[in-house]
Image 1 (cartoon, rainbow over the protein chains, first blue to last red):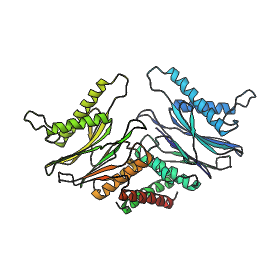
Image 2 (cartoon, one colour):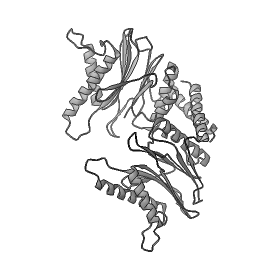
Image 3 (cartoon, each protein chain N blue to C red):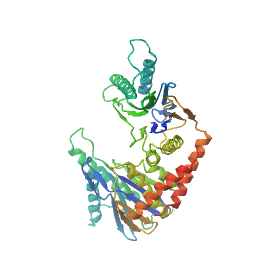
Length: 241
Length: 241
């Protein structure tokens, strides 16, 4: 399983993903689920992935290959598409194509290998946008009413986001919110695991403003996690029924 | 959907359930999902239900009918069984039997109508026990390591329980914990809805010590919910990353 979340705020975009991949309980690995593409100042795109690793790796490889192909007869790619909407379409088409290729090789009756993605970014002169791409390639977009999108094991970490994330939320608070959301998920679901990848894209910067890998032994994350637990317990004691 | 939770504490048992039943988004009703059986001072049993209403209603009707049959050739029932373990077995057998009866009438390929239950209680001289009964009739029991069991839409409300519920938790704190757990679930999932049913069974009382229906407009619940939201937001502001 996986937990990834993307936030679309007035001040910018914040993305967070875990890195645990498992095929059964005795086959656990660490794989990056966050992929950043940028032409600094011109365009920045972040992709988060959840689902079958064979699908997400192949889809990302194809997206990457297409982006590098600058020959005159190449179609548009995520780095050349005119709008972020077109970027979402390209990612959706690639995802659907790969899922269907892999499905055609599987024997009938087998579970379908599928994946979903969060795609966010901005090109110079355009608006920041955030999309959730479903396994079939269709997608939805974040709005002011719904400024965050999650993929994977999303339920444990949703209550805190529902309560604190608004379009006006600052980038600092937004990072805190996604990390606390991840913390709740890590505590409740073993298939979501450290290290974490965090990225921040400031509005109109058109580049990755901040990018960090948070390791299992990260002192800041551990302290924040403990302070939050303590704060929850203290608040709990003070509440009256 | 549904959210029900049962806690097994040193001081007693606390049970909470919602009442929303839905068959599609345009067919929403209120049905009790908490059923209490008692012979005050002798035996008390609480049952919480989740899943197909046709299964849970029929299973409860059969359990109730069997409990009222005091003829000499009647088998044991949840009110006459020698142990709480036997009570769990009876509930499990009834649930499996009803599921299988209903499944046999459905055309092949249809989704199976199934349900799960939480069963808790104590008989005089015995220990308090809490079980989760699976649709197939098998079950697991709460222990000191895992003092709560949930059925239905359990993920949103689990983080708060993980953090504050211990076997030593007082009955007052336990009621607060299950109500806050329900509050998080109500906010995130529309298929879980007010009113709520809350029951408390003090240790060795062998009767329902306290039982309340909490309506949508309940002033105390609304105040608690708002105070908790405020406390979470305040704690969030104080946490440093």
